[in-house]
Image: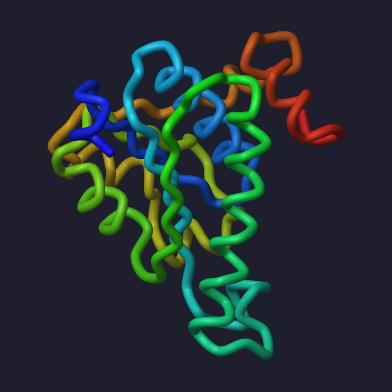
Length: 165
C-alpha cells in the first residue's frame, strides 16, 4: 500500500470505543487529504471475560468476527472520502506493542485518548501513553474535546454512529 501511493501510510488503532472511532475518522480524513494509505488495526484478546467476540468461539472464529466488524466500520467511515486506500488488520495480543510495531515505517500513528473501560485500562495500561513513549513515527492522540458534539469531528462522529456522539 505504501509503495503504491508513494505518500506514506497512516496507522490507526480502533477498539470499538468512541475514542477509537474518533481516531479512525480523523485518520481517514488525513489519509484522504494527503493521499496516504490507511492501515486500520483493531487489537483484541481471545478471552471470554474481556472480549465479547471470543465467547463460545475459537481463536480463528473470533478473529473473523473482529475483522468483519472492522471492515464494515471502515467502509462506513471511508465511503464518502473518495479514494482512501484502507487495509484492515485484526491481530490478537498487546494493543500498544502491536500498534507500535505496525507503525515502525508509517508516516503517523493515530489513537484515541481513552479506550474501552477502566477495567481494561487497569489491566493493560494506557495504550496511547505507551504509543507516545515507544513509537518511532509521529503519534496523534485524539482527545475527548475533539469528539464534542459541536466540533467538526463530533459532527462527523454523529453522522457515522447515530446516537453515539
